Length: 177
Image 1 (cartoon, one colour):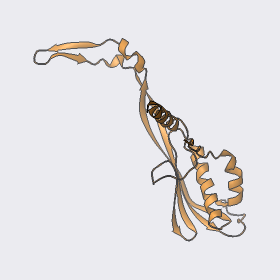
Image 2: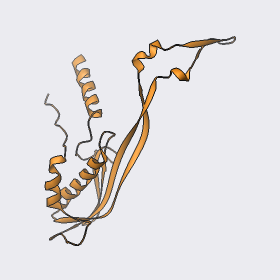
Image 3: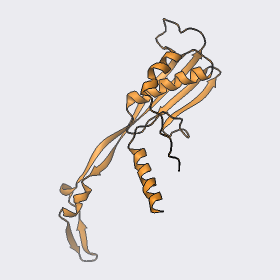
Image 4: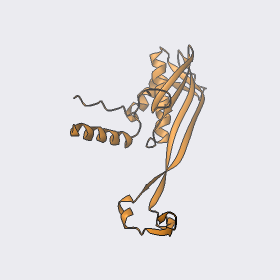
């Protein structure tokens, strides 16, 4: 039973320490891609990355998903009609908590309550770092035939898929047990 918990803890830590792989999200808001059909040839696609996933990776995965979807639906190229990337930042504490036992602790006496701890902000060993999660969203329209040469928002699905395939990191399969 102890091995089970050790393996579970290791998997949980590994999941936190890696960038979001290219995968469908289990539900909206989870890490990965989500798409929604608007019309027969129009979709919205969203890719959510965790705090380790770079902005460029999130945007590349969004384009890769658009190319995959275009080919799966029997089309040849897609046009991005709307596109945006949003970053959400927050500060998370981390610090030298291993040494917290060595900092001085003060207390003061209150007649009704007895000895009370005193907090000294100059000895606070907590440090903060900024964490940013990126979310890329696009509305794409799918078309058949050759890509128009004069439209900068048009992408040949086969070329996009071929060019981005090498940077796409897929999830590692779970070990067979």
